[in-house]
Amino acid sequence: MTNKMNALTTPPEGFFNEEIRSDYVVTSEMKKVWSIEIELAEKLIQICDKHDLKCWADGGTLIGAIRHGGFIPWDDDIDMVMMRDDYDRLVQVINDELEEPYFFECIKTDRYHKYKTAKLMKSGTTAILDPKSKGKQCIFIDVFVYDGMPHRLKRLNQHLMKIKFKREVFNLVSKFSCLLSDKMYKRFPLNLKLNHWFERTLRKYPVKDAYLVARPTLSSKVPLRRKGAYDETAYVDFEYIKLPIPTCYDELLTSQFGDYMTPMKLAPTHGGLYLDPNRNYDVVRKELLKKRKEH
Image 1 (tube, rainbow, N blue to C red):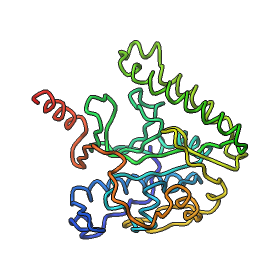
Image 2: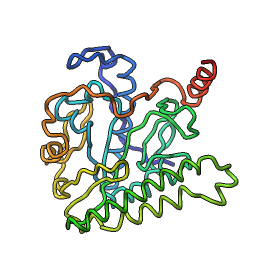
Image 3: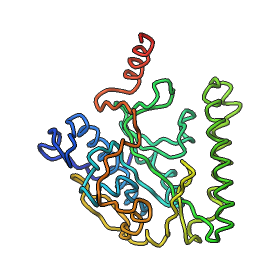
């Protein structure tokens, strides 16, 4: 049976009311989505704390924590990041710590998971980017991984080129792999084999020995991080919970975003994402596919 943890924080009275933040209207429906993502983040933090693992807010979530004390008003997700060694340990223990409605998904747990990042999800909800996808599409938070990078420039460039090549091969073959029948996939689990092939390169430079870390799984633009910037952790307000952040957040955000304290209204990272905090993705997916056929 799942080990019991502390109860999750309940949203304060009035949290779900529509409001204007930084001249942007945050609807009641989006607040419901936010509350589920906060719930998932708190669940991840509890598990990490229990097993002495470190995780931190990352990207837009880190900016939101520092600049807004919560979500960037026009954002729709939460990004967390871990070092590779702690992430590997998380994968080993997390399924024993979760029970319905929560589940952890990565390429190793679902053949239709086409992302090279892991996601902590809540069933009974919807976050659909592509209705044609057969993968689970519930409201989620991303769990990114930092891997060690070589310090010398020539070796770094060679390493990143190799990662880029393997990433593109992985993306190409994954699309084909999802078309295979379950019977064929059991004989030829291409996604799993490719993921192992890809991760061998990612793991080439162990985090414990590295001066630089990065998460180069999604794109060719790979912001390098000084690993020492994550040596100390602080907890800051994020809506109605506390999120862990690296104490050197200013160094990290400035190097990636420049003047991160000046808001820029950009489209959410998951543009076109259909969100429904109240219904299961499979029901909504069928409705969206039916509408597409009618048009």
